[in-house]
Image (cartoon, rainbow, N blue to C red; front, side, top):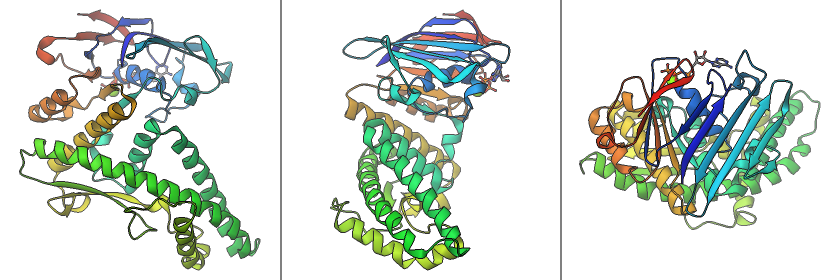
Length: 373
Ligand SMILES: Nc1ncnc2c1ncn2[C@@H]1O[C@H](COP(=O)(O)OP(=O)(O)OP(=O)(O)O)[C@@H](O)[C@H]1O
Ligand SMILES: [Mg+2]
């Protein structure tokens, strides 16, 4: 899949952008604060996921304007497609979103059409950071290939919020402990399902990542990734998330119930699980060097793209925001060579020659494309 034309107007500082993009490499070059990340963000939003910068809707519109227009033409192996996304300051709730001329209600309805993998400097900390970043990574990867997973995740989050609220009320004597039963039952079924799916994805991720890490470390180091559940001892060969697994989940929740009431939080569950990365048997989060952690991050992202490609039969669009400049030439070369059959957008401050000078470079200044070749 690749984007062939991109129009962006009055989105943040971007103005009158209208570019025919290259099927392979697109370099967005400009000084700081000229609009490079904004351009990447506009593409990303059209993939149907929330802003990776957590921008609020109203902040997406140019400060001096009443609304923005984005139009993306892209092609997959079957056909040409068009996404139109407009938003007006006067009516932020009522977004104008169209896919191939058909109106959609929410941005998330675009999901699954223009598939992107984004890589930002923050992602470089995935191996070292808090477990929440790794869970988020897993959840985005899985959502991209399994639409139903997103729905289950948001149901689980909703129940978790309700349960935690109830826990606080129980400790204040405002609610009865027995009210927890109904939440715990639902939580157990949804949590078991999430565990099974995350486990299966991690296994797949491990296969791709292991191979890639072997290459990047020139066979000197061995990577191993596994899913660490806070509920289940092992998830191997388990799939009965509505039966046996849900019962086990429920009984684990019962065990920590009194502790939960005291703290007002749910101590176990998929919101506490982690993706563990080991290099030569040592936990990367605790023992990994900076270089090793960077390599793990690269490998994770490339593996994400490969799995997406395999599952959807379409190459995703790769968005590299400011990461190349963070990498040494060996790692730069590694990333680019592994995604050479996918379209890539690369932002950078300095003019760089990639792919033997093939592809296009767009120069951006004060939100406008001033030159391209
Ligand atoms: N709603 C908005 N209206 C107008 N300008 C905005 C709006 N939101 C952000 N900007 C401006 O857009 C500019 C460009 O931001 P962007 O993050 O894209 O820069 P960049 O080229 O990626 O820079 P860097 O190289 O530092 O990452 C910033 O100066 C920011 O103040
Ligand atoms: Mg930027």
